[in-house]
Amino acid sequence: AGSIWDCSLVLAKYLARHGELLVRGKRVIELGAGQGVVGISCFLAGAAKVTLTDVAAALPSLEANLRLNGAHPPNGAAVLDWLHPDVSHLEPAQVIVAADVVWVENLAAPFVQALKRVCEASAAAMGAAE
Image (tube, rainbow, N blue to C red; front, side, top):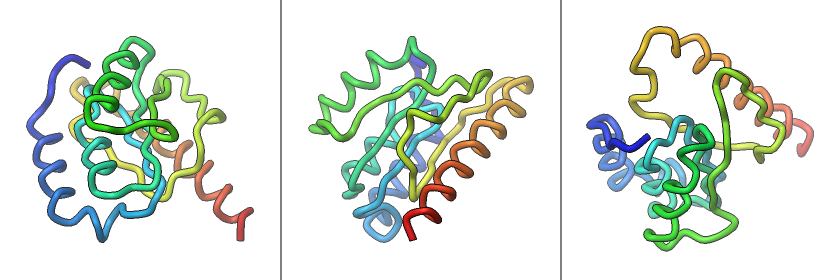
């Protein structure tokens, strides 16, 4: 969680150019946020709310990086451990982002399950709101 990988920078640059169309006014969750580069880029592009998720050890750094970039509540960081993907504490998202999050093969399946749970919870909440 202490590194910034190239894919995060590429996606952040893309969001800087196209974020207004993709995230402005929307609730965004970043999975495996690391240092939060992609999620913070969504905040800077006008997202209504950004939640950066990662393991508990990454949260102090994520929260500090949010503050350094002018993001205050309701923006924030939350624990999402892919090995035990409880998403009940996360608000539904309209946009889910992730960049360069699977660096070892044994994390691929847990990442997919966590992504599936976030998508399902968000879709269920959106359907209930209609």
